[in-house]
Length: 358
Image (cartoon, rainbow, N blue to C red; front, side, top):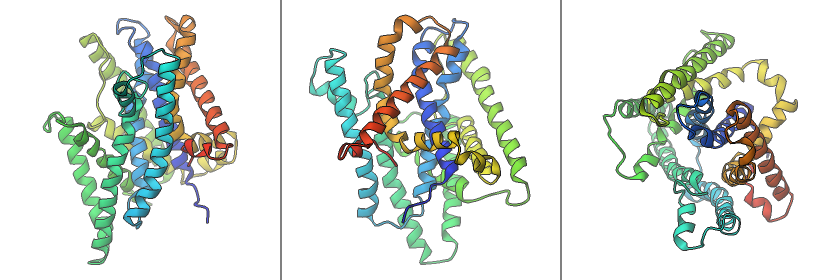
């Protein structure tokens, strides 16, 4: 039986991956300096990542929490889908680094790419290791729900609500600096379970119920999302960057990014209750969202290398040009080329396993 797709999940996943591509396309422009009059445009595009990663993780919670898979089934499904395309694109990135970028080949450089070291072609691969740790945490939560369900009724809702409250408290403590810095990266990765839990809570429970119409919630979450992002860019990122004389942005574990991510997620949840999303699902725009969503993992894995190739070959054209024009151009080219490559691989037996298509 084919699992029915949830369209608003596809839309959110497509928006999230595009936000990440926008971020990586913006790096060159952001680094030109905060004194550049177009810095706020570059910052606007770059910071799309700041709610995109939380939304990606929230979707994992919406889909995977409260599943009753065995340990073997859970990790066979998840880790095979994760690591097979990941290892393939790590190998391709290493080959590209050696053959095209003329970097020397050694185990150290290969491992840097594999483990997602900043400054390498594998800079985006840190997400893989984070999500592996998160999968283990999700499995533990699912086991606890199953165990508790045999003891009393409604344990799932009570347990998830409690975990959601604790997750918000954790992010608040991080926001105010009470938790300090993460001594080990593994603890940082483990912290993303907060967004997993919050994602499940938002997608499965409705605090307002029928008391407020979906249309009113759409307007409210849209206005709040725009206000929060506008404040984030023009009230924090731009003035703080100018003050520090370098690009400054917030981490994922703060109340502003939490509120922004929750409002954007909720916006599309409420949109799904109306005909707005239904009307576009079978049209060209809807099909585009679904295609990008299906290939989002493969796009995540390959886009940085494609973007690097484009920047090298187009640097003489776009350098010192208006980021309002050239960042979207780079994003469109990167996404189109990446999807074309993934689409071709998906048509070839055995190679289709490397696309990460869902």
